[in-house]
Length: 71
Picture 1: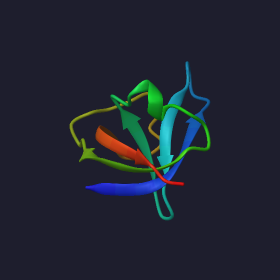
Picture 2: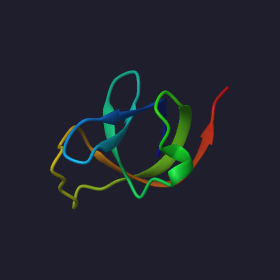
Picture 3: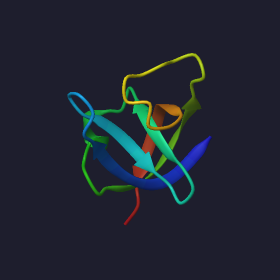
Picture 4: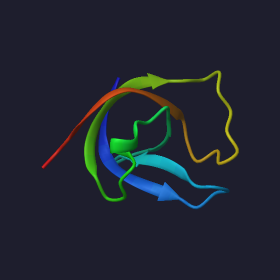
């Protein structure tokens, strides 16, 4: 799946990186360091992982396979 939105760092524990789209917030799994930038507008390709639980529990877990920055 492809999700477009803005990267945000949520303040749970050591911090959790999220992709906030128009209708949903996804917790990012295996996000590359280049993606971990607050306010970055991106299109992320990945897979929602129903078999993964997290401490933050801020939304579905999206395992990142690739991304591109949107100007």
